[in-house]
Length: 335
Image (cartoon, rainbow, N blue to C red; front, side, top):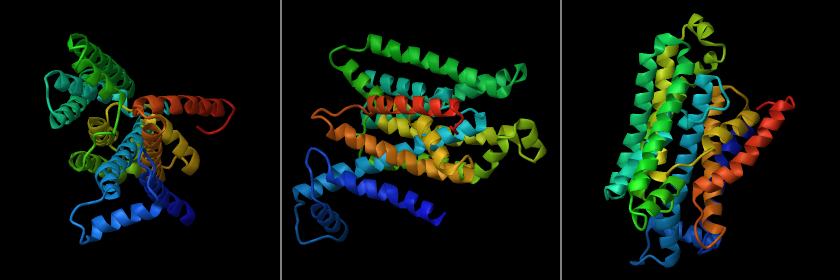
């Protein structure tokens, strides 16, 4: 157990340090350590050298953003899979990604700046999930509440996807449409320290909420009736988890764009490593998600001269891996 804790604690730190070394401007380990030391402890040098600019201004915010976004998506995915008791559920099941995409696309169409685009994306994600929840409450008495919630999320996501298509249809094909398309494919190239602060607050609040409730998620595995018999207020618990996971997902999508499969595949991998106990699964998924997305981002900015959008890479890497997980489950393994 101690070894596992040390491994999960040191893994993202090791990958983060290695990520500081690679890129279009490779750096030696001693140059990175010197740049970090100069930035943290100061020096007599008034103008930062090239290595310090690359490490502190460009790579550190991007690495922190990859860890933050990956942790948010993976933890939200694990939480959603727990409350819906369905391993095929992902963080965008309630329409948050489509809503955030519409908000960002509309803001780009209207000529908003980076802050406006992020705010619109965050608000669009919250609007989509709020709409899904209101539809569910309206039809709560017409069947299984979980099934109604999932179906409502699918419908709302479809509507917001159609609105994204409408915005792209009316956008200027020479100037605006490429910006919308690139944003929707996901990237961390333009992330700054201010973006990290803006996203870190809702992600931190959502993560704290999920970690406080993680032991109750284990009780939902027995079913709603059994959980109620054990003293769990199922509706309130599900609502709290949805709120926490939505805050994390919307904030992550707002600074990174739409990045698929992280919240679907990483919880599966983590569950194989640590088991289904949410007391361990949620923090482990946060570590694994951040590490995974950081590795993918390293590939995205290092593989070719032109940066590859993260959404493309996560889909290309995650889809075959998820198919292998399905094959393992069919052959009797845990998934």
